Amino acid sequence: MADLIRKEADGSLSFGDYTLPEKKKQEDFKADGGSYKVKTYNEITRLERDEVLVYESVPGTNVTALKKTDTGLSFEAEGKDDAQITVGVEPQTSYDVKVSGESIGVIASNLGGKLSFGVELQDAGKVSVEVIKA
Image (tube, rainbow, N blue to C red; front, side):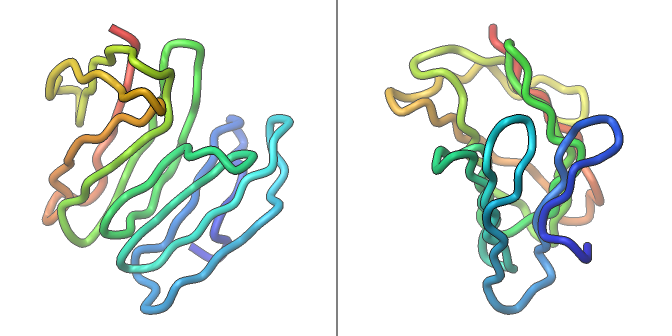
C-alpha cells in the first residue's frame, strides 16, 4: 500500500500498512467534509477523523473499503496476526458485529462510543467486518 490512506472510487476509505517496521503517519487527509489522520505500522493501525477515533487495531492491519453509514460501518481487514479492533460508534448503543458474514454477537459500545472485538486474521487473508446497529 503506497499511500497510508486513500479514497476509493466508491467513496470508501482504505488505510494502514501492517508490514511497516516503524511507525508512519499521514495527517490532514481531506474526505467527506472531515480531516483524517492515520498512524500505522506492524504494532498498531489507528484512523481518526477530526481527532475522534474511527478505527484502531492491535497489532496493525490493512483496511480497505471502510464505509460509515447512519446504522454503523463496514470494512475489510487484513493482517499477519489475529487483531483486537476498536471502532468509534454511537455511545451506549448495541451493535451486531459480523465477521466474514457470521455474527460474533451483539456488543454494546461504552460511554465514549468505543466498541471492541477480536478478529482472526492469521492465515485468513482478508476478512469482511460489519458493525450494524442492533
